[in-house]
Amino acid sequence: MAAARTPEQIRSELSAEREQLAGAVEELRGELGEAANISSKLKSKLPIVAAGAASVGFVLAGGVGATLRYFARRGRESDEKLRVGRWSILGRD
Image (cartoon, rainbow, N blue to C red; front, side, top):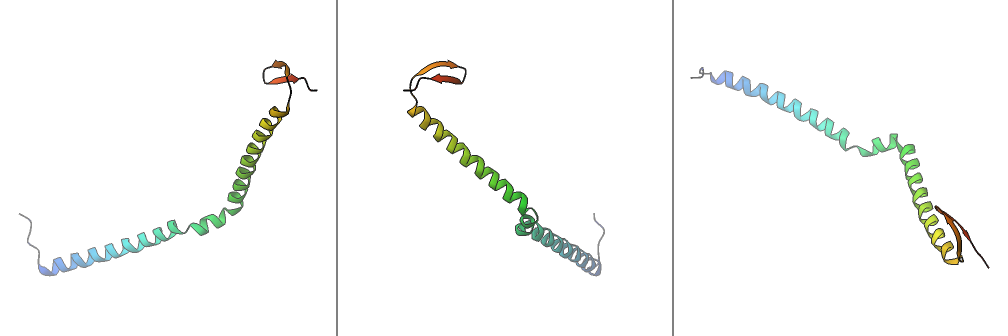
């Protein structure tokens, strides 16, 4: 059987546990505040993020433009005289 504790011992243990719990809650609040502060994280890496977004936009726009030019050119071209791999010689009037 567990040793009997006096009410004073129980009160002091509860008080110590409350203090530890309060410290842990404050620590978690601080860490949560840091984790949720996206603006400061983004602000420090803004040039990199902006360059990445511009690069992705350029590639996507160029990719769409190149594909459309490819299909538009194929529609205007005449008969294919010779094809070697992906290259071809076309006969134009």
